[in-house]
Image 1 (cartoon, rainbow, N blue to C red):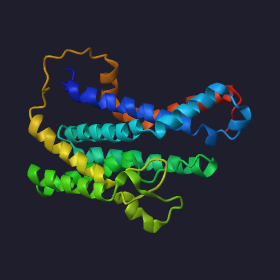
Image 2: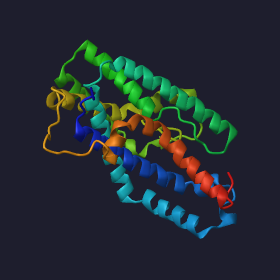
Image 3: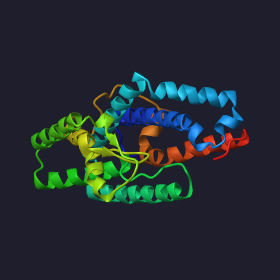
Length: 263
């Protein structure tokens, strides 16, 4: 029997993931002049144009607000999905294992290349810890008003510390790790502190309990194909989340290699 899914959640999650993939593609194109050591010497017009296009996008208001919006949407949907999971403890443990693997792999890439790719507390790490902490809190007191209020406080603290313009440290010291985890400092190729993102996930769990208690779509009259690309992405968001950057970077390096670029 096919598992019943809520199409609007898959669609929203899928669209947010597609926008994230686009954002990371622009990040890779922006960094070409850094990781291709002979970028200026080869001087291919098409690559130069893509690099400039990515620079314009990355420094634009569209990127700034669009990134915040889609991260917010994705985390809300992730919080709603928290209410559907059979075991959020198992889910958190699996994500912690994946997060640790990402840290180990990115560390060795950092050691043997000049890519500066080490990730100590990225989005998967934040998901894992947030889900675990929310699971613990709901075991202590499974009260939506309490969870909503605490989530709102965490978001307000995140806004107060201006999470969008954190102090980015280039040299890691162990005493900086608590600040990185909380979201007071930023470090690495990918970083998502608990403030304010954990709060958004917590509020998402409240929305899930309020509006999706019966685990049924709120918009039943829409009949999208099960093979709709956005729905497919939404159903497979975790594997895409984990693998897409490796795939994007690999394709870019391969194409660059064919045109004479080297890392």
